[in-house]
Length: 209
Image 1 (cartoon, helix red, strand yellow):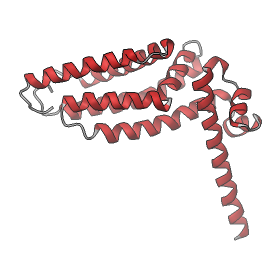
Image 2: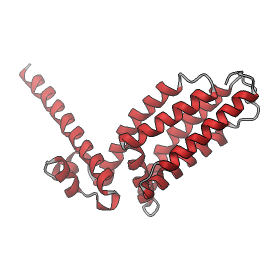
Image 3: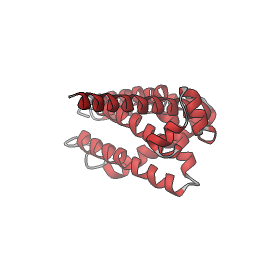
Image 4: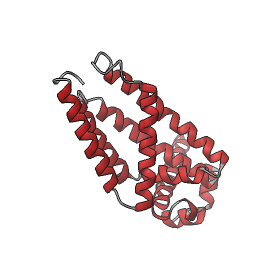
């Protein structure tokens, strides 16, 4: 019994340490950018020994990918929850704006933009980032197909092409906002989306979506 309690305590402590390292990695990447994020800077942010990074994650890149995985899982769950309540195009546009602003506030968009930029000259990192894009492409494609199923627009919407376009728009918007440090372009994009959704809704005479 004592051995089991010791093992459970060790596991809990290890999990807490990993979470602390992941939090520090996210904070450092958001603050300093990929080029200035190192084991030393992450350890300084979290106030722990940098050797813990290599013990728990193996490398700084593996740590940053793990940090992205954690925040992406949370965001994916949030997207499923919010978008699942959209019953028409106007609601979909409004939810899209809300979710993107949450991505900015949570740091998800910054982390994604930094790692995508870094991956352009790093083949192993690029391969890992491509793996992480696929679930989002699949989620978006499935959602679009289901959302427009049975609607007057279903014959016009190519879910696969639309999912690729939306992901490209998201990533491009992320990069521009990250470089300019100005989210006004996102506001303009979503304002335009609201107008398109309203216009299509009027043309469809209120028919879903």
